[in-house]
Amino acid sequence: MALVELVMPKMGESVMEGTILTWLKSAGDTVEEDESVLEVATDKVDTEIPSIYGGTLKEILVKEGDVVQVGSPIAIIEVDGEVASSESAPEEEENTVILEAEKLVEEAISAHGTAPATSQSEEVDATRFYSPLVKNIAKQENISLQELESVPGTGQEGRVTKNDILAYVEKKKSNGQAPAPAVTKAVPVVPSGEDEIIEMDRMRKMIAERMLDSRRTSAHVTSFVEADVTEMVKWRGKMKHQFMEKDGQALTYTPIILEAVVKAIKDYPMINIQIDGSRIIKKAAINIGLAVALPNGNLIVPVIKNADQLSILGLTKQVNDLAKRARENKLSADELQGGTFTVSNVGSFGNVMGTPIIVQPQVGILALGTIQKKPAVIETPQGDFIGIRHKMFLSHSYDHRVVDGALGGMFVRRVADYLEKFDVNRNV
Image 1 (cartoon, one colour):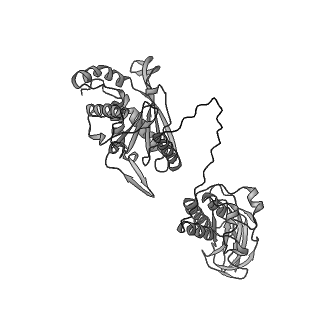
Image 2 (tube, rainbow, N blue to C red):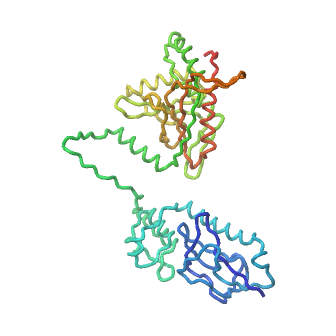
Image 3 (cartoon, rainbow, N blue to C red):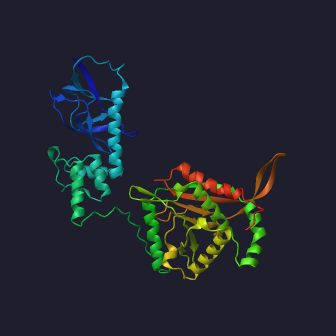
């Protein structure tokens, strides 16, 4: 026979302690390997802790309600045979329970989020103990402390368990009383007699709601690249007269950049995706939305369907036509739907760069900054020298839930590469 210590396992990188909620075994009970021995609460999850040894629970070292640091002994287990000392014991068994606990933490966080726990003032007013996880779920479901006090608990001394609060939430939803999500209250504005009050029109209200919805839905991150577009500027300067004389089309920078965007999407197709719950939908078509500012200040996003099948002339015709009819309010509903990626030209307002908001359910949007002449170091086989170059910033906002920094950054870098390597001798 040998005695071994059961210690408080680590349950996530930021979790340094846990509160003992309930002992599931008593001193003298037989414990199987991997059998749950107690329930522990942290600020992120309530979880059961399994034993890494099989034997008899000889002694319980901490009481229910105690706060215990990670790595501290919580019980003594008597096992059959000899075991290695704590200094030479293999780490694999300890890592097993740690990884299992971390897995439980991750699953709970994924299901319920990591909203901050209720305030200390609420704890003082409570008539019974609530674990951090229960308070987090209540917070996320907009359940007040007063309402939480009415939730029946099946735990020790009427404690509300995770299952109790989840069952209560489901019951409210089934009764058509689903709690509304927590909303930050706007600071009231009191206009003076000299202020002008302008009522939002229908489109502005719709834009405002969609922008808020997008921020609430997507984890926005923006990557920036400064591109040397001197060759593109030269080509456009050389070809714009031909486009106007031969085809009656004004050649702007937008369709040229759209072509580079389409090429980059082909190189990185996981930018051209949408999220449906836990599913990622990889779109077959490349439909580019083009943000257009209207004379009244509102924004509209017509869509160029199958942009990858259009030549530079075809893109020019589409850009000019959609922009013109958008400003004349002559677009059909179908022309505003189906986008898979969006481009916004903030440079048309003289802006250097921007951090655009994603158009749902897309996962990326590219802002084009104004083109400026700048001094730059130019590398040649004969050496480096200073020259005047045309530069612009590209700002790529993407949904960090499914697009990580490497992909988001490489995509916008690839767009810049296509623009920087533009063939100035190219024909239409």
